[in-house]
Length: 102
Image (cartoon, rainbow, N blue to C red; front, side, top):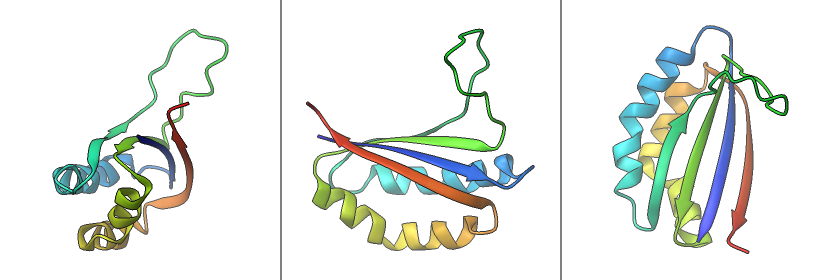
C-alpha cells in the first residue's frame, strides 16, 4: 500500500474556496481504480509542544493507494487536471511524502 501526505500551503484567506473545490474533486478521486483513501484535513489547535502549527493556510491531504501505478494514474486523471487549474490561484506550494508500509 502506498501512503501519500500532501501538504498544501495556501495563499492567505483562501482556505474556504480551496476546500470547496477539493470537496468537488474528492468523490471523483475516491472512484478511481486503486484509491483506498483520499481526504483533506486541517490543523487542530492543541497544547502539544511538538505540534507544528496550527496553520490557517495549510491543508493536509491524506491518501492511500494500492500501488505507485495507481498514484501515477491519479495525477494524470482529467478531473485532477481540472482541479489543478481551478486551485492554481489559491496554492502557493505543495510538498509530498510518498511512502509504503514497512
